[in-house]
Image 1 (cartoon, one colour):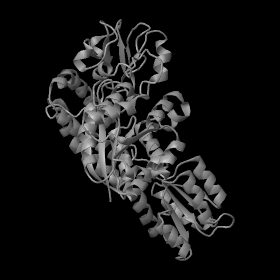
Image 2: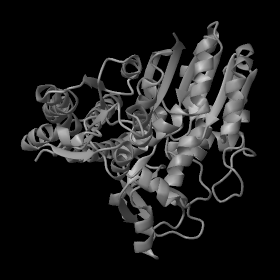
Image 3: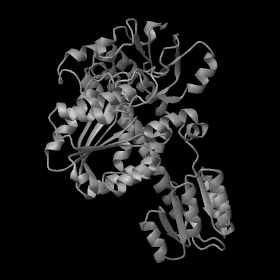
Image 4: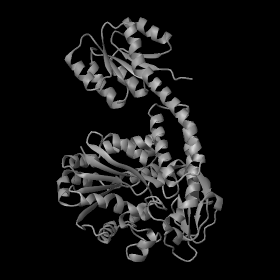
Length: 518
């Protein structure tokens, strides 16, 4: 059943418009009225409308004053200004897109109906067209999932899923959303089977036979750019998913062209200690622990597990005969981010500058720990929107605008993604077992092997072991590990939170983007 279109009509002579309102109600529209600006704002505070008709010339608050306050509350509602003449300020507002359109008094019923169709029915038509297109594609995607896919095929399939997820969410809630969620779940189940079968084998294969992995990214995607005349700035956004990048990309379209838009496979565990150290070192965790035993910290050890990224990067540059003069910093606060945005010119004198942005990772953790953030981002679409809002007002965007002005090549990447977990899997471990919800490392683990990706010989996937009986297990799909003790409380707290460390398309297939200034 289609949703009833709700309209707010604010006019100090609303009684004279009763015939128009009765006509609209007769056609199935819900019309709420207000005869002054304050009442209109109160109505907008209380509920969301599909469309607002707003009289420009009301006593008290004028139409333009009401418009400003309405847009602050609900910026995406189309507002149709009704005015006595094509006044210059109304035209300016229309050109500035703060109002969707305007009508000249006296309005006639035909004008009103056509305006509603223009701004409301167009959404319905786009939604129907998008839904129909996805229905056509649904069977093709399903066939791909059931086939024996290569690592390249999984990248292409994930691109398709992200495309359709963004397209469907752009049309509002539709019956196809649940169908898409089921297909995405099916894809992640197939991807988990693929990783279980193939992951260990990649470490005996050459690049090309296997995918680009975390240790390959700098050598093959960043270092070659340093041979060009332009300086290179590498921005590592911790915990950035591909769908989040596609949202950010739209805000950079006027400033940058995308030279490369690729996905690489984050190593397991898809967690900062492992994936980001591997990214900077150009080595797998086992190699780091052997070559740099003073740098690698085991999970049971105190202190940060990523405090030596700069040293690992320097060694990586030296190993690949690259210039070792570079700058590196972690952006954990707006103050540090603003400092770099204001001093972007300092990056022009270096072949490479590296900044690590931790906000997206902090956002996912805050969503777990804070009810307010969880309510603001109660699903994946809202989580993307929250990321978009951060980026829109972030020092990172300010920096990118400055770098575009100085014609700097920019690479944006991440160490791993994150996934929304729903289903608990019971696991038992001793006190030395790691606490991550998506992977466990330990020697006395008890679990159902059919429910996890099990690695009993860590060296097979180039991971260090604390002792001879250490093994790793990884959660797949939307699963997360929970202990039997206090099980129900634990599950209630962590269900529907974003976690990383395990096997899913969202965690493992992550972006590496090369941007060139326009």
